[in-house]
Amino acid sequence: MTRTPVNVTVTGAAGQIGYALLFRIASGHLLGPDVPVKLRLLEIPQAVKAAEGTAMELDDCAFPLLKGIDIFDNPTDGFAGTNVALLVGARPRTAGMERGDLLAANGGIFKPQGEAINAGAADDIKVLVVGNPANTNALIAQQHAPDVPAERFTAMTRLDHNRAVSQLAQKTGAAVTDIAKLTIWGNHSATQYPDIFHAEIAGKNAAETVNDEAWLADTFIPTVAKRGAAIIEARGASSAASAANAAIDHVHTWVNGTAAGDWTSMGVVSDGSYGVPEGLISSFPVVCKDGKWEIVQGLDINEFSRKRIDASVAELAEERDAVRELGLI
Ligand code: NAD
Ligand code: LMR
Image (cartoon, rainbow, N blue to C red; front, side, top):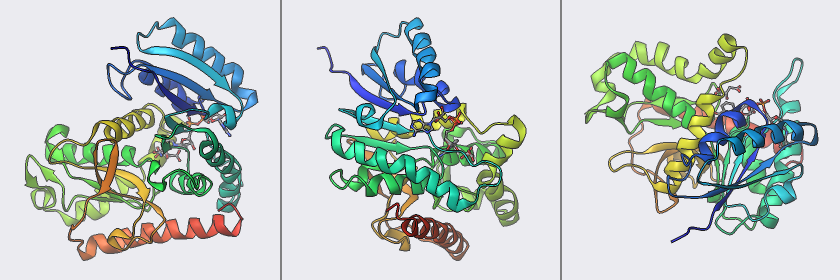
């Protein structure tokens, strides 16, 4: 049976994450090895030529699953009929820019994108926001798409999740595949909280196995939370291939499900679980099944975790209040 191609829109397609992402989508890593895709690349007019160059390279790969590439310079056309939207393009912080300036500049991008998704995306649209500040950009887009179920808008904390798995594996000598049930809580920022109290290493509790609260507080948490800045410092540019890889993982897990006995971390609209105010887009432990996510319920949150979750969630609430004051939501 010939399957209908899935339309995938990528914004910021000519950027560095876009370059690392598009070839993996086209080769079947996003949705699966038997799912044909059509790519819709959305860029600002000045970057359309560069996107055309990337499209030429995609053509030159002769990917069996790639059934078409279209390039757009406006969100209305870019999101028309799309099934999966990866919102990567964002306004980076530049010298002298205050946080409010950054939020305002990104509001100018994510408000019209939310409106265009609302107006023209396919009924089964799934949205992943990668562009920073990812959680609040996702909130802005979601608030401007009232006809799309709120749970279809998600923000990426899978890179943080993968970073935490890798750090824990290196500390304990375990294989990354032995690590399960790790959680990133809160914001994709330096306040995020990577939680190993419910994590398992080959079936044993990770925090008990590590048994080193000083390492947890002074090494593990800051290493994971500040990894983005450390990459910028080392590379002179922000993470790109690992961010693209995490975007692939996020959507693949959302569509194809979490493994039995495991969960993942996603920025999703809070229903008030774990004291996170309803409506904020915050990272939680989630399980995915049949193309839907659900927040894992009933975890005991100890004092160590509680204060860190609360701090990151407070930052999300501040960002929400700031964009509200700017009239962006
Ligand atoms: P980049 O500057 O290389 O590329 C961004 C691209 O977005 C550019 O080509 C630009 O022309 C395009 N763009 C800007 N405004 C647009 C709009 N309105 N519509 C469509 N395209 C638009 O940046 P990058 O390295 O690819 O990173 C992209 C974003 O991802 C940044 O905000 C970065 O901070 C963020 N990021 C997030 C994570 C995460 O874990 N959530 C990780 C790494 C990077
Ligand atoms: C990352 O986590 O690598 C990025 O979000 C860092 C950044 O500021 O682009």
